[in-house]
Length: 206
Image 1: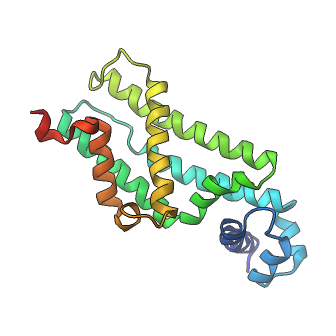
Image 2: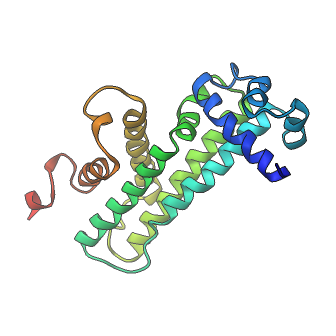
């Protein structure tokens, strides 16, 4: 393998171990055993166990934010267009989370048993997520598609709390009805609630 292939191989092997066993219970020896490389190869690429976790988290964060930034609005639209755009964004977000459930497990679970540097990075990731949603909301306000009397930062925090709280239950809870739903259905229901709350769907408001 090339140097870059070895690095990738180590990260791919480490991710499910950290997701399943947690940070403290996963050993570097577990990672190198799974990859079949020498322990010296690990230290060629990473300073220590914390370093590889941070690399995994940074890479996942970059991909996750790319999905959220794809929802940035370029031009004005009507309510139906906003709902369709938001549904597409949520569907892509949930599909990403499903494909990368082990990374999501790191975000949701690793902070429970990890060190300060990793926990700090996880907290910064969620701050970056909120800022990405805030940017999308602020843009919709600039285009007069959303009311301007509320603070976009506050609404983004509320929305992210809703989305990622439900994402965690959907991915890791065995309690119906969440785990039985696919990304499209789950996204559609969440967007309906996002726009219309407990009142119901669009027809109930016309």
